[in-house]
Image (cartoon, rainbow, N blue to C red; front, side):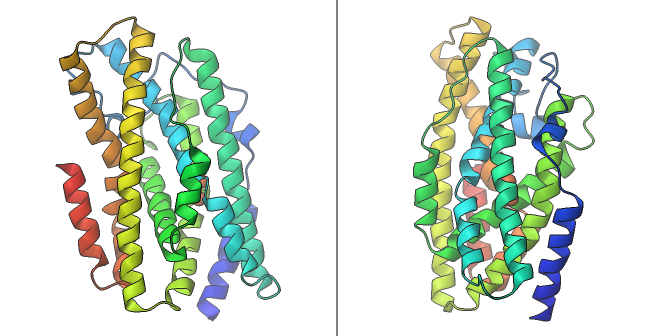
Amino acid sequence: MSTHDDSYGTCLHASVARAWTVDECFGGRDFDLTKRFLPERIAGVEPIGCLGDDEKRMLNQIRGNSYCHIFAFVEEYIVPMVVDHARDDVYGDETRLWTLLRFAEEEVKHQEMLRRACDQFAAGFGSDCGLIPGREDVAGVVLGTSPLTALLLTSMIEWFTQLHYQEHVRDHAELDELFRDILRYHWIDESRHARLDTLLIDEVAAGLSPDQREQAVDELLELGGAVDGLLAQQIELDIDALQAATGRTFADFEREEIRRHQQRAYRWTFLVSGLEHPNFVAIVDQVTAGGAAKLAAAATALSA
Ligand SMILES: [Fe+2]
Ligand SMILES: [Fe+2]
């Protein structure tokens, strides 16, 4: 137990020492619409043959906007989930309690940051960009799964958030500076949250049978299937937004080409980069016998 206590304490200290505000992140800046927002690994616009360079940049920006929206969307459930875990031991370990309350507060701050990004983008982009509705319904579905399932989903998200920033954004000075900072500030907190998820996963998994743990991985992959359905909806909205922004009407074969490349990019961004993340795979491998193989099979199917 002492290791866990120390870990909560370390995270709490870092959370206080590295605290930031949404105003600091934005610094009064606006997006530079002459620049791309997302790295190509996430945006996946380059191979789309029916689009010119300006159109690829616009689709990249539309994708930047939906990236913020989908993060806010999929993280919605994390606040009530973490508050519930904090309540489990509300009169016990005060360091754990305070750390988890800050975790929840930071996620509320992320919602504010990501919503502000979408609002600022909507005000500046010049044409409408549709965003999938139903965030509270999705949060309800996630919170209706087993506590281990919801924690595994959180862990996967927190690991891929870090990977996106560290490996694909941090060194890419050609991307819009404000957009990079939004991802940087998010990463600062998520690098800590990922450690906290591991502590909570250990706590919850300790009380479960091997079968229950395996079921949590199965349930996680079912949630992944539901996320894939949401991504498909967002792709159609993105293509509509690109039509509005460019004044073009895409022929069916062009729409299909954009859809095919975007499906691959979206799936890598929100599913495969998490399912394949070595730290996440190691966590699943530690609590289940067959989980890592299931993750690998799902990642392969989504990459086809
Ligand atoms: Fe977050
Ligand atoms: Fe987080």
